[in-house]
Length: 300
Image (cartoon, rainbow, N blue to C red):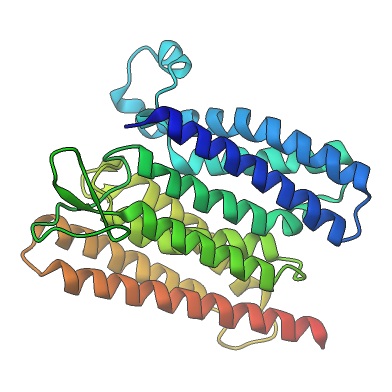
């Protein structure tokens, strides 16, 4: 574990993220002074609230197992931070940055979406320096980077952090493509969380309650919340309005069964993971279909 290199990469990435935000705001017609203030506030608060959020979520998820809450909160260790708490902290920082600069919140968040997805990807790639934190199963046949990572004993493990980072870059590209949409930020978060349901299942080290992985569940809850909202928005205009949220519940049930199968059954993992990926693809199709219905209804 190389904490110094990790912090350097995270620091450089956060600066690049804020510069991206500045230039994207300028391209969107925001005055240079407002864009500069928001980018600076985002940089400072992003670090403070990101770390605080990551620590707070970790303690919340691990509450039954932690004693001495006050002391634990002040002890910042990399392996005691929850990634999605950090994401929530950065989102809060973006909200406060928009208010500090006097920019309409939805407009700021939509413009920030590609830069935020970039930062999410870099945070994942930075796990390269964290040893076993971002890896999956041991690979008996060996492997090569970027599909696998080798530890100091010459053992190879699945490089899950690479997959997670690549999926976040895909979300960044989608955010650039759809940045003019009024729900760009929410949709970007959706496509950041959706593939992480699969990635969290692959990770060896995670916060788990029996066979339920806590951060995987959080990702699903956000995905399902979006599908419910999109379904309700087309309720008056489409007879099949309920399909997205119903499919969300179905895939949730299947995911729980798949996690149980991975932990307790002899079903080949390849088959189980293939079913999991298929379910997530269905949810992506449902999200895209329902949002197209929303846009069509708004044009009429």
